[in-house]
Length: 214
Image (cartoon, rainbow, N blue to C red; front, side, top):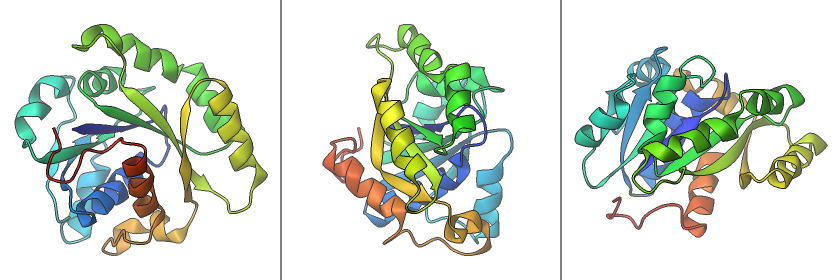
């Protein structure tokens, strides 16, 4: 299984990939993280933290769709840190050609939602359908991150996106130092918002049973 974290621009993707991968690993899933972003921030985080308990594979290439399946073992979930869709459309397209699930990261702000609509992200995702074996775009869910506790904007933007046909996770990622300073300390995902995300994904049937990641 391949889960692609995407966004038009800065959307907290690298933080999400690192924490999401740790949360899946701590739940017993076999994980491989993919660096599909030329910035190499995920690889730097891996190095600064003393090493993640799962591999971080370099695959920032338009040939991701060809190379990644050979690097991923049958029992692994691949979690992909995609480059910005505005600047690296070819890589994002390549990842989405084989992704089982796309997670669109965005903050619940007018500016960030506007970037999703101006690209537009839904068209970018739909356009890849003709390149996929089933002729359909990958299932896509929006993850609201950098949220402020109790802020009305979070619920307002969730409803706005849902009204426009997006699936939106109930789980949100708070704008907290725990995530903002992730590179400064080892990650323990248990009890975090990303642990809650794995729980929600499991309940929604978006994750395979542990031991069967096909």
